[in-house]
Image (cartoon, one colour):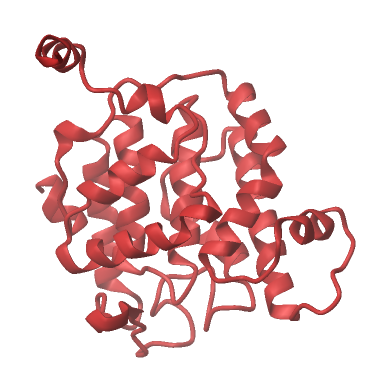
Length: 266
C-alpha cells in the first residue's frame, strides 16, 4: 500500500531532513535523562497543565506541590514515569515500533486520565464511544469509529507501521507521531504517547530526542489544527525538525541550493 494512503496524510518528502547527527545509544539516553524535567514540563504545558517548571522539578524530586489539583500532579508524574519506561526499553533493547510498546506507554501516560488506557479504542470495556478532537473555530475532527475489538484501528496501525519501514529514521519517527495523533488509537493521550514513540525511534537510531518547547505551545497547537484540517504534514514535520537540538544543522538547505543563493546575493 502507498505510504500516504496507509497513514492517512501526506507531506513533501523532499523537505524532510536526511542528514541528522547520530550518536551512541548511551549518549542520547544520557541527554534524555539529564533533560527529563524539561521534557516533562514541555509536554505538560502542551496539555494545558498549570505546573511551572520549578514545580515540576520539585515534584520529580519527590516533594508534593501545594495548591495544585491531584489530576494535574498525576499527569506530570505519568509523563515522568513514561519517559523513564521508554529509557529502560531503549537501554534493554526492548523498544520497537510496535503495538505492545505503544499500548504500554499509553497505559502509563494516560493512567487515571482517559476513559480507558493501555488498549486501543474498542478493545477494552467501552465498545462504542468515539472521541473527537476540538479544532476551535474550525469545529471538530472525528477519527475512525470505535468498534468492538478495534478491527479497523488494528488494520490501520499494522498497515501504517509496515509502510513506515520505507522511511529513514527521522522521517519515520516524525511521521509516526502525526500518524498516532491523527488516527487517535486511544481514548486519550494520543499525542503524548505518539511523541514518546517518536523519540524512541529517534534514540534507537542514535538521534537526540525532540521536545516541543513550552514557549512554542501556541504555535504547535495552531499547526496541528491545520494538519487535522488539511491532512498535509509538511508544515508540522518542518516544525518538529525545528525543535530538534541540531535544528540549525539539519534544516540547512542542500549544498547546491546554498551555493546558488550565495551567487544571487549582492
